Each structure stands twice: as structure tokens, then as C-alpha cells.
Length: 452
Image 1: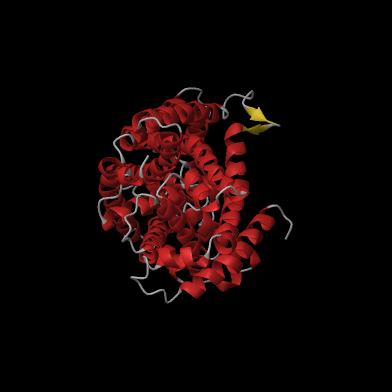
Image 2: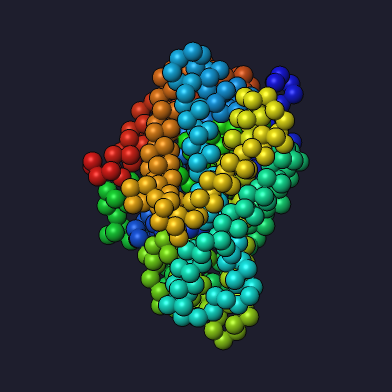
């Protein structure tokens, strides 16, 4: 397909909102508050922001440069810059990683839709044991979670098949502002609860006594995963950027929005948790077990208000999941569309069918012992492979590729838009990509396997 025929985002706002939507996901609303709760609140946030500047922005720029330079899907983009060298396989690796993540990510996304329904139906009112039983019964049900996987992929397909500007960009312009509005509404409601000041203080007052090497490595890992690095999303979206897009400015804006969402999520969750005497380090059960009980207790005097807050919260989670799943879907859609030379509709349909089948199998692995690999649920296998192996490896190799193989004149040309912008921080960027980022990613990778 000729480059002149390639779709583009229609506006700078569309670029920022769509790409920020790719980065903003369940990791911001779920994983970030959990890690902050386990690592001293504001102390973790300060370290995280430092890691985002040190690691996140340079790695994001790497993918922006590759995608916009090539104006092609992630696999072809790397191949164009790598020529016939083995570096070209990094792009295929990213597409494969994004495809796998999309498949199992839809399982948790479907859970969010179930909880939207449950909050409206009043099924989440009860003590902690009841909420725990509700989640266990639902997640191990053989057909309900699978049905929501199908629904979520159909919604995603509807957006992606409409194209870049009329589908992805238009949806992002609607969903991202809605997401921010919901975040603010729920955060304000949570901060007005009796005893919520303890939660606000926990989030905004640094407790450096809880900071150790684990905190730094955790913040590094969170910055990497939260920004959708290493899964082909940013590279694919950057291929739709216009040539006059200011890459560095866009990266800073996207990272700022992503971090703001994560902090607002903390202001939404911790005041509510502290208001009922809960613990800030509830872990992964926070979203589907702890919070329903928190909303029920916190608004016990006005049950309808508790239901409304729960409904808005799970709508928020669903939107965050949808914006991320759209970008993951687009990675594979663009690949099939361009490499198989089929229409966008056919490429998107192929991705939807394949991902839905795998997603349903991952969902069924919670109730069917036959869907296990060496005693581990298929869902957990995909989660481990992509999150702890594929993403760090892909990010590490991309840093080496960009920092040591791609000519520095190409990098400078992209970052300065052909010399029309000042490249004041180009030397800093190149140093980070060549030395700092690979070292940080390697530390994360080794640490999670207990090597360091």
C-alpha cells in the first residue's frame, strides 16, 4: 500500500487522546493504586514519576520514531529500518505480543462489564464474604465470563473497523474526556466521605521508610507496563501521525495524562478505603472484592448513592479497558491489513475471531482444569509470558536497535521534524536510549526472576 494512501489521525488532539487511551488502561486504575498502597503512597508516586521521565519518555519516543518514519504496521516498520538484518524480527515479536495480550486482556475487561450490570442490579451489596463469593462464583462460571469476552471484542471490532480517524480517533475523543470526568466525580465523592482525609494524606504524604530497592524496581516496571511499551501499540499509532507532529511534545503530553489518571485513581480509591477502615495494600483483589464492599459500607446511609458510585466506577474501568484493547486490536489489524493485502474490515474480522477464541479459552481456564499448562491456568500463562518476558525483552531489544543500529541522523531528523524544531535534548535522549533504558529494563527482568 502506498504511503500516500495511509490513514492519519485528523488532529493533534486526536493524536494525544488516542495514544493516551492506548496507555491508559486497567494498569492505571488497578495496578498503580495497588503498588502505591504497598510502597508508601506518595513516596512511590515520586519515584514512579522519576522513572517515567527516565525510562518511559525515551522508550515511547523510540516507538514513535520507528512508526512515523516507516508509516507502516509494526512488523513492516522495523523491517524497513533494519533491512535484511535480524533486528527486523523485533517488529513481528511486538505484533505477536500485542495479539496475545489482547486475547487475555479481554477476560478482565469482560469482568468489568459484568460488574457494571451487577452494580445496576444491586448484586454487589453485602459484606466482604458475600462479595468474595460473588466474584469466585462469577469468574469460575463456564459461560458468563466467556459471553462478556465476546461482547467486549464485538464493541472493539465496531470501533476498529471504522478506521483510524472515523473509528479510533472519534471514539477516543468521546471516551477519554468521559473517563476523566468520571474519575473526578468519583474522586470528589470519595474525598467527601468521613475519615477520607487519612487516605488523602496517605497518597500525598511521602513515607520514605517503606522505600527500598523493591520500590524502585517496582516503579520502573510499572512505568514500563503502564505506558503500553513493547507491544506494538505506540509504534502502530505513530505510523498514523502526520509529518509535522511534534514527537517529544506529544510524548510528554501523553505521559502526563497517563500519570494524572493514575494519581486520580489513587485519590478515588484510597479515601474510600480509609473511610471504612480498610487497608491500602489489598493487592489485586482491590477492584473486584475490596471496593464493592467499600462502596457498600461507605454509602450505607444512602444505598442508592453507593450503587451509583459503583456503577460509575465500573463504567470507568470498562472505558479504560476499551481504549487499551482498541489499540491492541489495531496492532494486529494493521498487520493483517497490510501484510496479507486484505481490506481493513477483513483484517479486523480475522483478529476479532482469533482473539475471541483464545480469550474464551483463557476465560474457561478458570473453571476447566483441562485448560492448563503444567498446572497453571491458560490465562495466567499468557499473563506471565507477555508481562514478565515478552514486554521487557521487546523493550530491551528496541532500545538496542534504536540506540546502536539506527543512524543517529535518522533519530535527529525525526525528533526535529527535518530540522524545523530545536533538538536541545537529543543528546540526553540518545544517552538514555543507549545506556540508561537498557540497564533499567535488564534490572527489571532479572529482578522478577529473583536473579537480583
